[in-house]
Length: 426
Image (cartoon, rainbow, N blue to C red):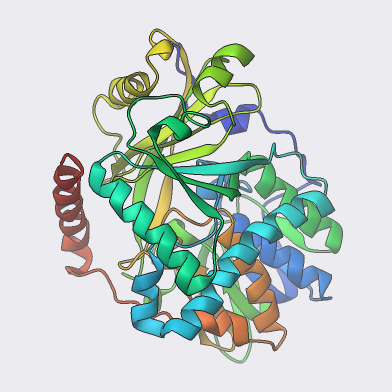
């Protein structure tokens, strides 16, 4: 097995180049300073610049360094939690508006790709696969309720035989197919948004970690070598917040997730395992997900770590799961392996809000943010421009901090995940 760390497959197949970006040096002035160069930050920079705002974006690493450039690349409607959970805290009318916005997020992704000619290999089709009989029962009930309560008929139940038109494996008890979902190359998509933001007039600085935000009559966003004076700060750090805004501590937890990429499989073998080229994820709590790349590799993701340390035997376990689904891949070379940090909330719903009129934030997509983060950027631009209604709809979802304080949050979350891993087995 040949593995090529530390770069991901996405890094190796980057197609989008930006105008020259450098670290921040000296003092700059802006209407809005954005902290974070992922999908949220780049989308916000684009939408704000298109509205005529002077925008400076600061990224600690390179654009797309975090989950936005490392993820499974799945573009899906919905949220990281089920709609009944959202209904229970915001009411049915508000939940219907939120569901509609999640569908808008998918449509917006497609429009941004087309409008800005982003070469990110967008494909349509998503399968949510039932591993256990109880998954199959829950999925059928879910699809029926979504049609009845939300008017959403895009999900179609497939029995095991029909599922083979999309996923050729005997491992599943059926699944839901959603033509609205899909997948893309996440790094090229993120870089494409950043390029579009630059062309719209935003200024991007990379390798510029923010060390503090000084809020007062004039807000200052400080790095080791410079400062941005601005009216509004937009915090889009997600899993990389690292205590920058103490008021947000404990609202999200950082979880590591991992992906492997095979050697190119060739058209015939690729079509034999995923004939309709969908994105796929299973219904386990600690789920696995996978898809084909444009050059016909299988990108297979899963496994989690709360400590930041890579789990032992990661390559062996992930390859074994892949082969158990698709025995024809036995002996297939693994060319890439990489990981990334995901920001999750306690209730798995996104956490949007503002501390006052000078600091906005959006984070906590809980593994469901590739499309939603693009919409978050648009909603943040709307809110800063004075139209807060849609942003406030998402901000109305209540959130609690993870229990246990700084020392116990991670062990408690790991313990809870162990319980759900055991539950996944029956």
